[in-house]
Image (cartoon, rainbow, N blue to C red; front, side):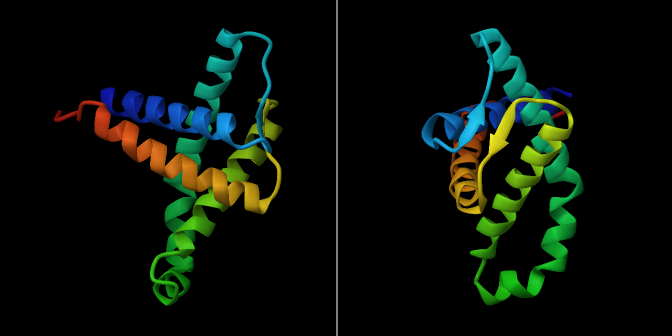
Length: 126
């Protein structure tokens, strides 16, 4: 459970950096507390999308992954971010990614920041 919480915090931090750096990734909220709560909800949705959908998409696109020497991962990450935006829209959570190329840049930022934050957080050995 501790590992799940740490990964959610890492995803929330990575999404916050993407919202901060990319103009077309928006997160609405009236106060800082409201924005933090929204970021945690978006991080949970993003985690569920990555656990349930991403492995299936990776399996189906394995030939493209091999053909592009792994660069197709950027497209898959962008699609997961767009899917997260769509799910958040359906759940009435104020998170929006505007366009595919914005999602590619956002996915790249989320991947790098999430990796860096995960390195900084303690590992759960349980």
